[in-house]
Length: 116
Image (cartoon, rainbow, N blue to C red; front, side, top):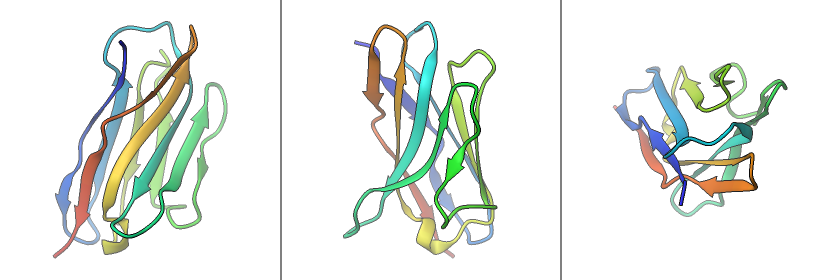
């Protein structure tokens, strides 16, 4: 079964940058919509950014101007570039995507920790 696989994550100091990527574990025709969510301990899951193929990304207010979501021209990978990281960005980040042939999947999640 094809699933989304995330890469990136880890520990950064406040003000630092980090890049997360998400792609299917095996080839699919193309992705249609992709989104990144995050969940911090004791908090509800939050939509961070989303993008539809051919469309512009949409961001949560808390990350506007700091995070950039992009989908590759081949529509088989998305990248979340996170700049000017803050401690409140600490969370488990998960991608969710849909694609051709009724593809729908969550990634396994990756921990992002921002701390000095």
